[in-house]
Image (cartoon, rainbow, N blue to C red):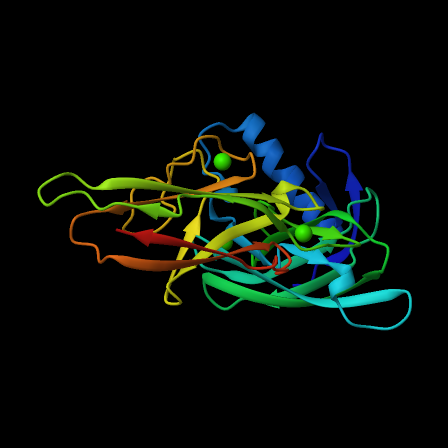
Length: 286
Ligand SMILES: [Ca+2]
Ligand SMILES: [Ca+2]
Ligand SMILES: [Ca+2]
């Protein structure tokens, strides 16, 4: 079965809603479904065997057009979309992936029909070509069809497209330059390390801040307000306020730590992969 993908947008609040040029027989089918639901209660709902799409993932999630190669007025990038498709009676036929710009009412910029054998995760790679001056939140949508003509829900993802991007910057590092170990038998001392970060594209554009300790261990600083797991095996980041651009790491110093100088190299990385300059500091443990 083939669906025509010349889709037009129907306004539905904030969420795009696709109204396909579906074949006449499919409209007739929908009419039958709705009519039977209204007039014959208790009849098994044929849509119970419709495909279900979930778990959509889009990569990259952020596309900085000035980071892409190419000549002239357009730039191209490959977008990878994965999603999970299930169907109770497993008669899946195809999934449909569409990428549309942030402007309402536009035809899809890229689309692909993926033939499905069985339920599971499928991957679609689409070549997206857009004007160099594009921007905004592009919408990725996925739906699936089965052999009976049932259409799934539509799952949505997005790509943040920006015409220009700039690397993040570490504005300051706040940490002690020397600490004294607790005596044997006493509790460890908490050391708070804070990096204040900015990004010309906004704080949301900062992906993470990392620190390499003594040239070996890499740890994250988090702007999570102290919730969640910033580093596996560590406790709270100790961060005070989430989303304020101050990234925090709290480490523990106990009596068993070695005396000496420890190096810390900080880098911030944004969602387009651009890296800040590295800022180096040391802590002398006595
Ligand atoms: Ca089915
Ligand atoms: Ca940036
Ligand atoms: Ca913070």
